[in-house]
Amino acid sequence: MSQSEAGRATREPPIWKGRITFVMAAAGSAVGLGNIWKFPYIVGENGGGAFVLVYLACILLFGVPLLMAEIGLGRATRANAFSAFKQLSARSKASSQWKWVGGLGIVTSYLILSFYIVVAGWCLYYFVVTVSGDFTQSGQTLTQADTGARFDGVLASPVLLIVASTTFLLTVFLIVASGIKNGIEKSVNWMMPSLMVMLVLLAIYSAQNGMFMKAFDFLFSPDFSKLTLESVLIAVGHSFFTLSLASGSMVTYGAYMNDSASIGKTALAVAGIDTMVALTAGLAIFPLIFAHGLEPTSGPGLMFISLPLIFEQMPFGQIFGAAFFFLMFIAALTSGVSLMEPTVAWLEQQFSMKRLSAAFLTTVSLCAMSLLSAFSFNIWDAKWLFGMSFFDGLDFLTANVFMTIVALATALFCGYCLKPEQLQQMFGHQSRIIPVFTFSMRFVAPAFVGLMVYAAF
Image (cartoon, rainbow, N blue to C red; front, side, top):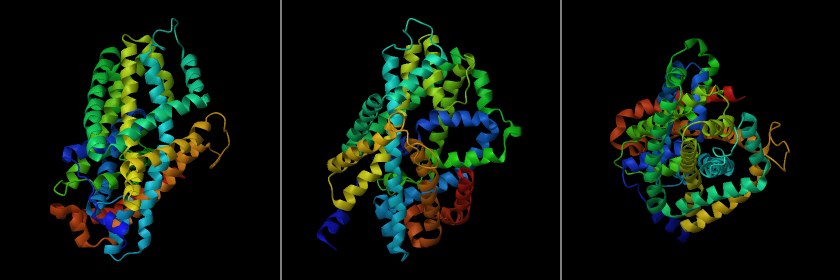
C-alpha cells in the first residue's frame, strides 16, 4: 500500500450528530423541485387516491429496499460510492468491475447538478422579482400571456441564467466546502424544518383563500377508472426518482451514518417525509389554481407562469409569492448539496484533497458545464440526443439510462454478490430483515427497473 493510500485508509469520515440529522439530510436530498409541482399533478392526473395507494406500494416494495441498500453500502465501508463498491466487491471476491457502478453514480449526480442549477436559478430569479413587487405592484392587471412572456424572456437571456445559476451554485459550494459538521449538518438542521413549516403555513393560507375541498378531492379521492398501466408505470418511475436513488448521494450520506442507527427505520422516515412534503405542496398550490380557473397539470408552466399570475391577483400575494419561491429555492438547495457531495467525497478520498479544494474544483467545473444547459435555451439551439436540446438530452440520459443502470446493478450486487456476513455488517442488529432484503434485491427491484425501462422507451 502506498503512502497516499495509507493516508486515505486511515482517514475516518465524520459521523452525523444523530439519526434525526441523517433523516433531515437524506430527506433534504430526496425533497426537490419535483416534489413541489410534479408529484401533486401526476396524482391528480392518474386517479387521485388510487394512484397514491399504488405509489406507496411502489415506495415500500422497491424504493425503501433500494434506499436501505445504498445507505448500507456507504455505512459498511465509510467510503464514497466508487470506493464502497470497490471495497465490498474485493471482500466478496467478486469482479473488481463493480466499482464502476459507484463511479457511474457519481458521474450521474454531477451531470444532474450541472443542469439542476439552471432550474434552481429560475426559482432564485422569481424569488427576487416577487420580493421586489414586480408582479404584484406592476400597476396593471397581468394576463397569462404576460407571465408567459416573462418566463420566455428568462430563458432567452443567457446572462440572466448564468448569474442566477452561478449564485445558486456558490451557495451550494459554501455549504459543502464548510464540511459535514459545520456545513451540511448545520444547514439541513434549519433548512428542512423551515421548509416544512413554510409549506404548512402556505397550505393553511391556501385553504383559506382557495378551493380547498376541490384540491383535496383532486389529490386524494380514489378514481380507479383513471388507474391504467401507464399510471402504474408512472408510480414506479416516480417512486424511484423521488428518493434520490442511483446517484451516489445516499451511499455517500450513508458513509456518515452512526453504526447504531436503524437503516430500515431511517429509510421509512425519509420516504415518509418525502411523500408528506409532496402531498402538502399539492394542498398549498392547487386550491389557488382551482380558485382562479387555471390548469393544474402544466408542469414548469404552473410554477413560473400560472402562479405569478395568481400572486398578482390575491391578497398579500407578494408575501405569499415570495415565501413560495423561497421554499422552492430551499428545496433546490438541499438537493443541490446532496448532488455535489458524492463528487467532493470522491476527490477527497481518492486523491487526498482537502475538502475546500475538492469543493472548489467541483464548483468551477460545474459552472462551466452548466453553460451548455443554459445556452441550450437561447444561443445554442442544436439538437443533441434523440432530437433534444442539450438540457433535455442530459435530463433524459441521466434519468432514464444512467440511473436505471446504477439501480439495477446495485440491486444485483447486493442480491447476488454480497455474502451473508457482509449483509450482517450492513444491517447489524436488524439481521432479521436480511432474507426479505435479499429477495427484494434479487427479484423485486430488477422487475421494477424493467418496468421503468419499458416506461421510458
